[in-house]
Image (tube, rainbow, N blue to C red; front, side):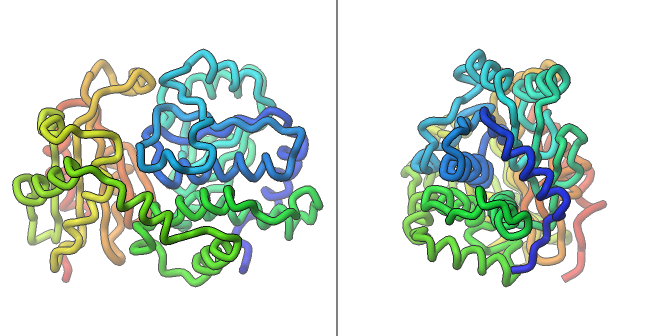
Length: 366
Protein backbone atom coordinates (compact mmCIF):
# COMPACT_ATOMS: atom_id res chain seq x y z
CA UNK A 1 0.00 0.00 0.00
CA UNK A 2 1.42 3.37 -1.07
CA UNK A 3 2.10 5.85 1.71
CA UNK A 4 0.26 9.18 1.49
CA UNK A 5 1.70 10.79 4.63
CA UNK A 6 4.63 13.17 4.57
CA UNK A 7 7.71 11.20 5.61
CA UNK A 8 9.18 14.31 7.27
CA UNK A 9 6.07 14.69 9.43
CA UNK A 10 6.10 10.98 10.24
CA UNK A 11 9.69 11.39 11.50
CA UNK A 12 8.65 14.38 13.60
CA UNK A 13 5.75 12.38 15.04
CA UNK A 14 8.10 9.49 15.82
CA UNK A 15 10.41 11.82 17.74
CA UNK A 16 7.53 13.25 19.79
CA UNK A 17 5.98 9.85 20.55
CA UNK A 18 9.36 8.35 21.46
CA UNK A 19 9.78 10.99 24.17
CA UNK A 20 6.22 10.86 25.47
CA UNK A 21 5.35 9.62 28.94
CA UNK A 22 1.98 11.18 29.76
CA UNK A 23 -0.26 11.42 26.70
CA UNK A 24 -3.73 12.92 26.42
CA UNK A 25 -5.75 12.05 23.32
CA UNK A 26 -8.53 14.49 22.43
CA UNK A 27 -11.41 14.29 19.97
CA UNK A 28 -14.44 16.38 19.04
CA UNK A 29 -17.74 17.10 20.80
CA UNK A 30 -20.60 14.63 20.39
CA UNK A 31 -18.06 11.94 19.45
CA UNK A 32 -19.08 9.61 16.63
CA UNK A 33 -17.55 6.32 15.54
CA UNK A 34 -14.56 7.92 13.84
CA UNK A 35 -13.83 10.15 16.82
CA UNK A 36 -14.06 7.29 19.29
CA UNK A 37 -12.28 4.84 17.03
CA UNK A 38 -9.33 7.10 16.24
CA UNK A 39 -8.79 8.32 19.81
CA UNK A 40 -9.17 4.89 21.42
CA UNK A 41 -7.16 3.30 18.61
CA UNK A 42 -4.22 5.58 19.40
CA UNK A 43 -4.51 4.84 23.13
CA UNK A 44 -4.49 1.08 22.55
CA UNK A 45 -1.54 1.37 20.18
CA UNK A 46 0.48 3.35 22.72
CA UNK A 47 -0.46 0.92 25.47
CA UNK A 48 0.77 -2.00 23.36
CA UNK A 49 4.15 -0.55 22.29
CA UNK A 50 5.10 1.61 25.28
CA UNK A 51 4.96 0.16 28.79
CA UNK A 52 6.32 3.44 30.15
CA UNK A 53 3.49 5.58 28.69
CA UNK A 54 0.24 6.56 30.36
CA UNK A 55 -2.29 7.42 27.65
CA UNK A 56 -5.76 8.80 28.47
CA UNK A 57 -8.61 9.68 26.13
CA UNK A 58 -10.43 12.87 27.16
CA UNK A 59 -13.80 13.64 25.56
CA UNK A 60 -15.62 16.99 25.67
CA UNK A 61 -18.95 15.22 26.33
CA UNK A 62 -20.39 11.71 26.47
CA UNK A 63 -20.40 9.30 23.54
CA UNK A 64 -23.68 7.66 22.34
CA UNK A 65 -24.78 4.37 23.88
CA UNK A 66 -24.18 2.34 20.72
CA UNK A 67 -20.44 3.03 20.97
CA UNK A 68 -20.13 2.09 24.64
CA UNK A 69 -18.95 -1.43 23.80
CA UNK A 70 -15.72 -0.19 22.16
CA UNK A 71 -12.62 -1.45 24.00
CA UNK A 72 -11.54 1.21 26.48
CA UNK A 73 -14.69 3.35 26.19
CA UNK A 74 -15.44 2.78 29.86
CA UNK A 75 -12.09 4.34 30.83
CA UNK A 76 -12.33 7.65 28.99
CA UNK A 77 -12.50 10.91 30.96
CA UNK A 78 -15.49 13.08 30.02
CA UNK A 79 -14.79 16.78 30.51
CA UNK A 80 -18.46 17.60 30.97
CA UNK A 81 -18.67 15.17 33.90
CA UNK A 82 -15.20 15.69 35.38
CA UNK A 83 -13.79 19.06 34.29
CA UNK A 84 -11.16 19.31 37.03
CA UNK A 85 -9.74 15.88 36.25
CA UNK A 86 -9.68 16.62 32.53
CA UNK A 87 -7.84 19.92 33.10
CA UNK A 88 -5.36 18.23 35.41
CA UNK A 89 -4.62 15.57 32.81
CA UNK A 90 -4.03 18.22 30.13
CA UNK A 91 -1.80 20.29 32.39
CA UNK A 92 0.30 17.26 33.36
CA UNK A 93 0.56 15.85 29.82
CA UNK A 94 3.88 15.95 28.03
CA UNK A 95 2.23 15.07 24.69
CA UNK A 96 -1.20 15.83 23.27
CA UNK A 97 -2.70 14.02 20.28
CA UNK A 98 -5.81 15.46 18.62
CA UNK A 99 -7.93 13.32 16.32
CA UNK A 100 -10.88 14.00 14.01
CA UNK A 101 -11.20 17.75 14.58
CA UNK A 102 -9.53 20.68 12.86
CA UNK A 103 -9.58 23.51 15.41
CA UNK A 104 -9.82 23.90 19.20
CA UNK A 105 -13.35 25.32 19.16
CA UNK A 106 -14.58 21.90 17.95
CA UNK A 107 -14.01 20.63 21.48
CA UNK A 108 -15.97 23.42 23.21
CA UNK A 109 -14.67 24.70 26.56
CA UNK A 110 -12.06 21.96 26.50
CA UNK A 111 -10.54 23.88 23.58
CA UNK A 112 -9.79 26.80 25.91
CA UNK A 113 -7.92 24.44 28.24
CA UNK A 114 -6.00 23.03 25.27
CA UNK A 115 -5.03 26.50 24.02
CA UNK A 116 -3.91 27.59 27.48
CA UNK A 117 -1.77 24.48 27.96
CA UNK A 118 -0.17 24.81 24.53
CA UNK A 119 0.62 28.48 25.20
CA UNK A 120 1.91 28.03 28.75
CA UNK A 121 4.00 24.89 28.35
CA UNK A 122 4.23 24.44 24.58
CA UNK A 123 3.36 20.80 25.07
CA UNK A 124 4.13 18.89 21.83
CA UNK A 125 0.88 18.39 19.92
CA UNK A 126 -0.04 16.13 17.00
CA UNK A 127 -3.15 16.60 14.87
CA UNK A 128 -4.60 13.71 12.82
CA UNK A 129 -7.68 14.78 10.89
CA UNK A 130 -9.55 14.70 7.58
CA UNK A 131 -11.59 17.91 7.75
CA UNK A 132 -11.01 21.05 5.71
CA UNK A 133 -9.07 24.10 6.89
CA UNK A 134 -7.08 22.94 9.95
CA UNK A 135 -6.23 25.73 12.40
CA UNK A 136 -2.62 26.46 13.26
CA UNK A 137 -2.34 25.04 16.79
CA UNK A 138 -0.46 21.71 16.50
CA UNK A 139 3.25 21.08 15.99
CA UNK A 140 2.80 18.19 13.56
CA UNK A 141 -0.28 18.11 11.36
CA UNK A 142 -1.58 15.17 9.37
CA UNK A 143 -4.49 16.79 7.54
CA UNK A 144 -5.87 14.87 4.56
CA UNK A 145 -9.45 15.92 3.65
CA UNK A 146 -9.46 13.39 0.83
CA UNK A 147 -9.26 10.55 3.37
CA UNK A 148 -12.61 8.94 4.25
CA UNK A 149 -11.88 8.79 7.98
CA UNK A 150 -9.42 9.83 10.64
CA UNK A 151 -9.17 6.16 11.63
CA UNK A 152 -7.65 5.39 8.24
CA UNK A 153 -5.08 8.13 8.82
CA UNK A 154 -4.24 6.70 12.25
CA UNK A 155 -3.73 3.28 10.66
CA UNK A 156 -1.47 4.79 7.99
CA UNK A 157 0.56 6.66 10.59
CA UNK A 158 1.02 3.49 12.64
CA UNK A 159 2.24 1.64 9.55
CA UNK A 160 4.49 4.47 8.39
CA UNK A 161 6.09 4.76 11.82
CA UNK A 162 7.17 1.15 11.38
CA UNK A 163 7.99 0.98 7.67
CA UNK A 164 9.14 4.50 6.81
CA UNK A 165 10.93 5.45 10.01
CA UNK A 166 12.08 1.92 10.75
CA UNK A 167 12.08 2.36 14.51
CA UNK A 168 11.81 -1.07 16.16
CA UNK A 169 9.59 0.41 18.89
CA UNK A 170 6.79 0.79 16.33
CA UNK A 171 7.16 -2.59 14.64
CA UNK A 172 4.88 -4.74 16.79
CA UNK A 173 1.62 -6.01 15.22
CA UNK A 174 -1.66 -4.20 15.89
CA UNK A 175 -3.64 -5.61 18.78
CA UNK A 176 -7.23 -6.69 18.26
CA UNK A 177 -8.42 -3.77 20.41
CA UNK A 178 -6.59 -1.28 18.18
CA UNK A 179 -7.86 -2.94 15.01
CA UNK A 180 -11.45 -3.04 16.29
CA UNK A 181 -11.47 0.66 17.13
CA UNK A 182 -9.96 1.67 13.78
CA UNK A 183 -12.33 -0.52 11.77
CA UNK A 184 -15.33 0.92 13.61
CA UNK A 185 -14.35 4.46 12.66
CA UNK A 186 -13.73 3.53 9.04
CA UNK A 187 -17.09 1.75 8.83
CA UNK A 188 -19.16 4.47 10.47
CA UNK A 189 -17.62 7.44 8.66
CA UNK A 190 -18.35 5.83 5.29
CA UNK A 191 -21.88 4.71 6.16
CA UNK A 192 -20.79 1.06 6.15
CA UNK A 193 -18.65 1.76 3.06
CA UNK A 194 -21.49 3.33 1.07
CA UNK A 195 -19.88 6.75 0.45
CA UNK A 196 -16.33 8.11 0.16
CA UNK A 197 -15.22 4.51 -0.08
CA UNK A 198 -14.40 3.79 -3.71
CA UNK A 199 -10.68 3.34 -3.20
CA UNK A 200 -8.92 0.01 -3.41
CA UNK A 201 -6.29 0.82 -0.76
CA UNK A 202 -9.00 1.37 1.86
CA UNK A 203 -10.09 -2.23 1.43
CA UNK A 204 -6.49 -3.35 1.77
CA UNK A 205 -6.60 -1.79 5.23
CA UNK A 206 -9.96 -3.44 5.98
CA UNK A 207 -8.53 -6.78 4.86
CA UNK A 208 -5.58 -6.38 7.22
CA UNK A 209 -7.86 -5.47 10.13
CA UNK A 210 -10.08 -8.49 9.49
CA UNK A 211 -6.97 -10.65 9.26
CA UNK A 212 -6.00 -9.46 12.73
CA UNK A 213 -9.33 -10.73 14.01
CA UNK A 214 -11.88 -7.91 13.61
CA UNK A 215 -15.41 -9.32 13.45
CA UNK A 216 -16.94 -6.89 10.98
CA UNK A 217 -20.41 -8.47 11.11
CA UNK A 218 -20.52 -8.21 14.89
CA UNK A 219 -19.39 -4.57 14.79
CA UNK A 220 -22.09 -3.75 12.22
CA UNK A 221 -24.76 -5.28 14.46
CA UNK A 222 -23.51 -3.47 17.54
CA UNK A 223 -23.52 -0.11 15.79
CA UNK A 224 -26.44 -0.25 13.36
CA UNK A 225 -28.78 -2.82 14.94
CA UNK A 226 -28.86 -1.56 18.51
CA UNK A 227 -31.69 0.96 18.41
CA UNK A 228 -34.84 1.16 20.51
CA UNK A 229 -38.46 0.92 19.37
CA UNK A 230 -38.81 4.64 20.13
CA UNK A 231 -36.03 5.36 17.68
CA UNK A 232 -37.79 3.40 14.94
CA UNK A 233 -40.98 5.38 15.58
CA UNK A 234 -38.94 8.59 15.38
CA UNK A 235 -37.66 7.54 11.95
CA UNK A 236 -41.22 6.96 10.75
CA UNK A 237 -42.27 10.38 12.03
CA UNK A 238 -39.35 12.06 10.28
CA UNK A 239 -40.05 10.47 6.92
CA UNK A 240 -43.85 10.85 6.98
CA UNK A 241 -44.34 14.17 8.75
CA UNK A 242 -41.13 16.12 8.53
CA UNK A 243 -39.40 15.46 5.21
CA UNK A 244 -39.49 18.27 2.64
CA UNK A 245 -38.41 17.62 -0.95
CA UNK A 246 -36.91 20.34 -3.14
CA UNK A 247 -37.12 18.54 -6.49
CA UNK A 248 -35.39 21.09 -8.72
CA UNK A 249 -32.27 20.82 -6.55
CA UNK A 250 -32.60 17.08 -5.84
CA UNK A 251 -32.62 17.89 -2.13
CA UNK A 252 -34.40 16.63 0.99
CA UNK A 253 -34.62 18.45 4.32
CA UNK A 254 -35.77 17.09 7.69
CA UNK A 255 -35.76 19.17 10.86
CA UNK A 256 -36.96 18.50 14.40
CA UNK A 257 -37.57 20.70 17.41
CA UNK A 258 -36.67 19.47 20.88
CA UNK A 259 -40.32 19.06 21.88
CA UNK A 260 -40.74 16.64 18.95
CA UNK A 261 -37.75 14.62 20.11
CA UNK A 262 -39.23 14.35 23.61
CA UNK A 263 -42.26 12.56 22.19
CA UNK A 264 -39.97 9.67 21.25
CA UNK A 265 -37.86 9.55 24.44
CA UNK A 266 -34.86 10.72 22.45
CA UNK A 267 -31.43 9.52 23.55
CA UNK A 268 -27.99 10.34 22.24
CA UNK A 269 -27.43 8.38 19.04
CA UNK A 270 -31.10 8.00 18.10
CA UNK A 271 -30.69 10.43 15.19
CA UNK A 272 -27.80 8.45 13.71
CA UNK A 273 -28.39 7.51 10.06
CA UNK A 274 -31.65 9.41 9.53
CA UNK A 275 -29.87 11.87 7.23
CA UNK A 276 -28.97 9.02 4.85
CA UNK A 277 -32.51 7.80 4.32
CA UNK A 278 -33.77 10.42 1.82
CA UNK A 279 -30.90 9.47 -0.49
CA UNK A 280 -32.77 6.23 -1.16
CA UNK A 281 -35.35 8.29 -3.09
CA UNK A 282 -34.81 8.40 -6.84
CA UNK A 283 -33.21 11.67 -8.00
CA UNK A 284 -32.46 12.88 -4.45
CA UNK A 285 -28.73 13.58 -4.23
CA UNK A 286 -28.52 15.95 -1.24
CA UNK A 287 -29.95 15.35 2.23
CA UNK A 288 -29.94 17.61 5.27
CA UNK A 289 -31.08 16.68 8.78
CA UNK A 290 -31.36 19.27 11.56
CA UNK A 291 -32.37 18.87 15.18
CA UNK A 292 -32.50 21.18 18.13
CA UNK A 293 -30.39 20.36 21.15
CA UNK A 294 -29.45 22.06 24.38
CA UNK A 295 -26.25 24.03 24.66
CA UNK A 296 -23.86 22.00 26.79
CA UNK A 297 -21.61 23.66 29.37
CA UNK A 298 -18.61 22.96 27.16
CA UNK A 299 -20.26 24.91 24.32
CA UNK A 300 -21.20 28.08 26.19
CA UNK A 301 -18.22 30.03 24.76
CA UNK A 302 -19.47 29.24 21.25
CA UNK A 303 -23.17 29.86 21.80
CA UNK A 304 -23.22 33.66 22.04
CA UNK A 305 -25.83 33.55 24.79
CA UNK A 306 -28.18 31.16 22.99
CA UNK A 307 -29.61 28.27 24.96
CA UNK A 308 -30.49 26.38 21.77
CA UNK A 309 -28.09 24.63 19.43
CA UNK A 310 -29.07 23.15 16.08
CA UNK A 311 -27.04 20.15 14.97
CA UNK A 312 -26.80 19.87 11.20
CA UNK A 313 -25.88 16.71 9.29
CA UNK A 314 -25.59 16.54 5.51
CA UNK A 315 -25.03 13.75 3.02
CA UNK A 316 -24.75 13.66 -0.76
CA UNK A 317 -24.06 11.33 -3.63
CA UNK A 318 -21.41 11.30 -6.34
CA UNK A 319 -19.63 14.48 -7.40
CA UNK A 320 -21.84 16.71 -5.26
CA UNK A 321 -19.85 17.93 -2.25
CA UNK A 322 -21.53 19.19 0.91
CA UNK A 323 -18.45 19.93 2.99
CA UNK A 324 -17.97 23.40 1.47
CA UNK A 325 -21.63 24.26 2.13
CA UNK A 326 -21.32 23.13 5.75
CA UNK A 327 -18.10 25.07 6.22
CA UNK A 328 -19.28 28.34 4.71
CA UNK A 329 -22.90 28.34 5.89
CA UNK A 330 -22.82 26.47 9.22
CA UNK A 331 -19.21 26.91 10.32
CA UNK A 332 -18.67 23.17 10.10
CA UNK A 333 -17.11 20.80 7.62
CA UNK A 334 -16.39 17.18 7.01
CA UNK A 335 -15.62 15.20 3.93
CA UNK A 336 -17.06 15.51 0.49
CA UNK A 337 -20.26 13.46 0.82
CA UNK A 338 -20.71 13.52 4.60
CA UNK A 339 -20.44 16.72 6.60
CA UNK A 340 -22.04 18.67 9.40
CA UNK A 341 -22.13 21.88 11.35
CA UNK A 342 -23.82 23.79 14.17
CA UNK A 343 -26.07 26.79 14.48
CA UNK A 344 -26.73 28.53 17.80
CA UNK A 345 -30.28 29.84 17.85
CA UNK A 346 -33.83 28.73 16.95
CA UNK A 347 -34.11 26.00 14.37
CA UNK A 348 -36.35 28.20 12.20
CA UNK A 349 -33.39 30.50 11.66
CA UNK A 350 -31.16 27.57 10.73
CA UNK A 351 -33.75 26.37 8.20
CA UNK A 352 -34.00 29.88 6.77
CA UNK A 353 -30.22 30.01 6.41
CA UNK A 354 -30.28 26.65 4.62
CA UNK A 355 -33.00 27.82 2.24
CA UNK A 356 -31.17 31.04 1.48
CA UNK A 357 -27.95 29.27 0.50
CA UNK A 358 -28.52 25.81 -1.00
CA UNK A 359 -29.03 27.15 -4.53
CA UNK A 360 -25.47 28.59 -4.48
CA UNK A 361 -23.92 25.21 -3.71
CA UNK A 362 -26.17 22.43 -4.99
CA UNK A 363 -26.34 21.25 -8.58
CA UNK A 364 -29.54 21.20 -10.57
CA UNK A 365 -28.25 18.67 -13.11
CA UNK A 366 -29.50 15.11 -13.40
